[in-house]
Structure formats: structure tokens, C-alpha cells
Amino acid sequence: KAGVTQTPRYLIKTRGQQVTLSCSPISGHRSVSWYQQTPGQGLQFLFEYFSETQRNKGNFPGRFSGRQFSNSRSEMNVSTLELGDSALYLCASSLRLAVSTGELFFGEGSRLTVL
Amino acid sequence: QQPVQSPQAVILREGEDAVINCSSSKALYSVHWYRQKHGEAPVFLMILLKGGEQKGHDKISASFNEKKQQSSLYLTASQLSYSGTYFCGTKKTSYDKVIFGPGTSLSVIP
Image (cartoon, rainbow over all chains, first blue to last red; front, top):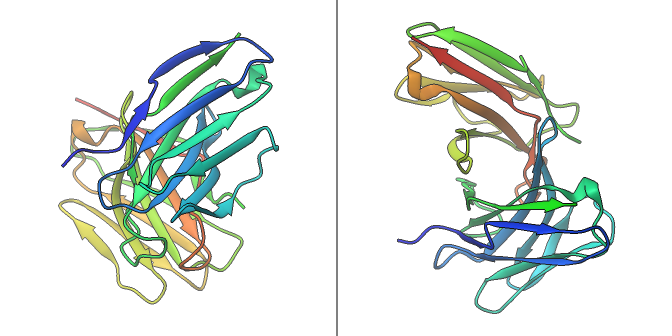
């Protein structure tokens, strides 16, 4: 079956602009999480959605927001971009919110460069 | 709070063993291990639950000491394909988000 699909894969923006990233989870998966990956920082948790509701949120400023649609697809938005927002943004889906197996399936990410 | 991983990086020759450690200052419900190869998405290796047993598949296994809030990933007889960055993730409850450590870079050379 198809994996997690993230679009766009690469994008370049300038400071002050905004960006929207999209994530299509594996069919049947209802939970979507977003992570920011930068060198040396590892994977920083942004937010987690389940059934269109934000269930968990990380320690990022309000410029970072997200949502989930009824078909489980998710989008994240970053407004007023800063140079430090340059990163790989990873989306991960899982079958349910709390699962003993807990496996997250990651997409290949959207690489954002802010100039 | 982000778990701590050690070492930050390790270089092995094929066939050697390695241990990667993960620790948290908070009580944990579960520990999750992932491997990310260069330019690829992280891939799930295994999960260890509080009260669970040591897990493993092939030559990679892990343990979870819930009293010390520590987990260790054991790679035996390493292969070139083991190269990558290993992340441990932790959850405080079953409904918590997974918080990942900074990663351990592992390079296996011939």
C-alpha cells in the first residue's frame, strides 16, 4: 500500500513569507504527527492530530499551525518565516492515537529553505 | 523533555558490536527506536513498553530499565547496512506524543 506522501518535497521561501506543507497519511491511518528536523537538534515535535483534533502540541511559536481534514490528510502552515525555520519537516502517520505497537510511519519530508 | 542519547557518534568495523543508550529524567510508558539512513525517512525498529520484555529482531535488540528510565539498543555483528542515525523516542503515557532524542550517528566501515 502507498506510504506517507508529503508535498512539496523541496521549497525555497524568503523571510516574512508563509508556507503550507501537506501530508497524506497511509490509508486507514487516523493519527498524523509533524516533526521538524535540523542538524544537531534531531526530531522536534510540532503537533499531533487525530480525527481532525489537535491532541498534542510541541513548544513552537504560534507561527506554526496545523490542521487535519476529515480524510485524515493534514497540513501545516508556518507564517512570517524566519531563517531558523529552514529544516526538514517530517510527517508521520499511525493507525490510532494510543497503540501499544506505536509504530510511526514517516514520509520523506518537505525540505524548506528560508533565504 | 527530550531524552538523552549516548554516544553522539560511533564508528564500527563490520562484525563489531555497539550499544546506544537512551535515558530520560521522567517516568516513561514506552521507548521507541528508529533508524534513519542518509536522505531517507526514519524507519521503526522496535518499541519497548513499561513492564515489557527485552525485544529484538535479527541482530538488533533492546532493553528497557523502567526503574532507571533507561533503554539500550544493542547491535551485534554489525553490517554495513546498519549505518545511519538512531533515534530513541519516549512517551510518558500511552496517549502522549513521541519525543525523540538528538540521535546517535553510527557508521559501519569495511
